[in-house]
Image 1 (spheres, rainbow, N blue to C red):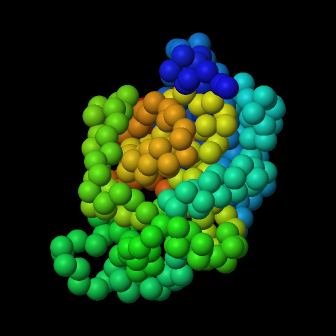
Image 2 (cartoon, rainbow, N blue to C red):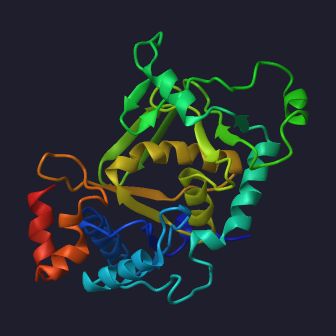
Amino acid sequence: MAPPLSSSPYRGRLAPSPTGLLHLGHASTFLVAAARARDAQGTLVLRNEDLDRERSRPEFYRAMLEDLHWIGINWQEGPDVGGPYAPYSQSQRGASYLVAFQRLRNAGFIYPCTCSRKDLALAASAPHENGVLINDEDDPIYPGTCRPRPGPPESYLRNLPSSHSAVNWRFQVPDGEVVEFDDGHFGPQRFVAGHDFGDFLVWRRDGVPSYQLACVVDDTAMRITEVVRGADLLKSTARQILLYRALGLEPPLWYHCPLVTDASGERLAKRHDALAIRTLREQGKQPEDLQDLMAARS
């Protein structure tokens, strides 16, 4: 049995996706992650989050490695250097995700969902009894259309589909339960399941695990002791804590970084080519110039 994370040496991670060029926001967060690992005399892991089959590209992966090295970040484990917890690309870790999925399914934590994106869009635009169905632009609260009806759990489990990829699968959150955690930057955090977020996807009908499930499985397998990422993922942390609990796993510590925004105050996305690290390099910027650029937009 592995020792508890609380007594383990520091292990941090970078987890970029090769779906576009890294931008100034990525640089800001990854520099913090690298600094925290360095200050703790710990290990920094690079994980290639290439689960998005349609948008992941080899050229973006190569650019990702080059740009990270250019801004001065080096890692001790990763897909390019190996390590004891390989493979470090999510596209090669499917068996681990399937094991976790089956544990959740067999324990009754998840249920099949046949709702299409169109169904959810229609539900989101319909009136809702509490007046709020969507808490923010990227996070529609699932209306519960496919939630299991009350009844004996044994009967429900017997009637679940045998195929994991025939439908979407959602985690049934414990409505009203408060999920709390201490964030290393923002301090105490508090979310209410069923109010701040609803039943969330853990497995897609195309056979791909969700971001939430893949992160929990990989961070556990790679013995990550602290997750450093952007503040836009604070709510994802609450969801992942529920997954850790359901799977009987120990969660890491959390450190969420302030977001870097564009001129209009919106958080950066990969479509912001003008603030891509590659573009800034081509403009003659040096790594030391990034701090001033980030400070001006945070």
